[in-house]
Image (cartoon, rainbow, N blue to C red; front, side, top):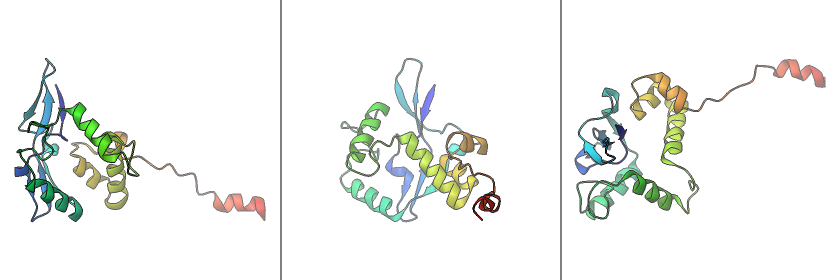
Amino acid sequence: MHRRPDGPLQWDQLDPDAKRVTIRRTIAQDRDGKFFVQEFTKSDAGYRELELPDHVVDMLLRRRVASYSAFVFASSVGTFRHPNNYRTSWREALRDTPWKGTTPKSFRKTVATVMRDELGIQAAKEQLGHEDERTTRLHYADEVHRGPAAGLVLSKLFT
């Protein structure tokens, strides 16, 4: 069974006053290929409360006024978005922005890297809902490889 935490966000998971969202559901796919919302996350670490930036809270409040569904990012018929349609909407939303060509996975990696650089690997792990820090390190937080501290040695070539 395959699970996706990015699709089934519902309005009852948002607390705009606290500027937080609780991640507690996933989209799963059964053996017949049918997608459904399950009322739990892939792991205990996946069930989490995340802080939202002010501009995201503002955007969500605007969406809420026009909403016709329990789902924040609903399909045209009010259900959760099928993962393929989600990716299509993602591409369309980013088409005329500096983020054009960014996939949900590459954006998730960028978030992990920024979180790691600014707040540490533990914060990145918690943001992504990983059980094990190694998952975050190996698959999401791009590592910067630094050469040796050779500046002084190399400067001898030019003096």
